[in-house]
Structure formats: structure tokens, C-alpha cells
Length: 106
Image (cartoon, rainbow, N blue to C red; front, side, top):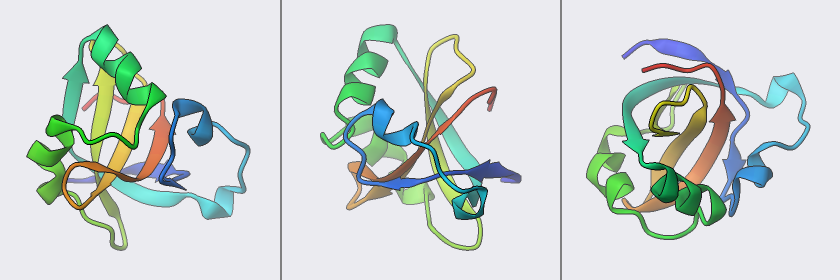
């Protein structure tokens, strides 16, 4: 797992729009991607419109994620797209922190 870049993480976002707010560059955190999940369009749309719902795919991979000097995150993408949401899960199955990233290919 390697350092990938910096991203602005938001605590307990509900929707994708919550991640797209203006922010200071100093508030961005370093991250790495431990695994990527490619979702079909309808599942990805469902995820980005309600990120606080429990998700089985987060539960399945969440134990690999961890906050630290470099945040080890799950990357959730719509199949065939280069943007997505970095997720740091809490209690195994839902989003605690998340960040939008573009141009990422695991």
C-alpha cells in the first residue's frame, strides 16, 4: 500500500455534495487506498445519495482501513469511472469520514 495523495475528508457526510465544499489545502490529509470497490451505476448512485446507511461492501473491507499518519481508505467507484469516494469506516459498516477524489485508478 503506497501513499497516493491528499484529500479533504468530511466527517459523517450524508451525500456526495457534502464532500464538494470549498476548503483550505492545509485541511487535506494524506491517504492510501487499501482496496477499491467498483459498483454498478444504480448501487453507486444509492451510495452517494445516502452515505450514512450501512453497507455490506464497507463491512467486508472496512477492517483493512485505519486512520493514522496516512489514512488507509476504501475507494468506492462507479464501474468504469475514474472518480470516487474515499471511505474511512466506523464500526465496520458505515462511513465515518469520506473524501471525493478524481482521476484515481486503483
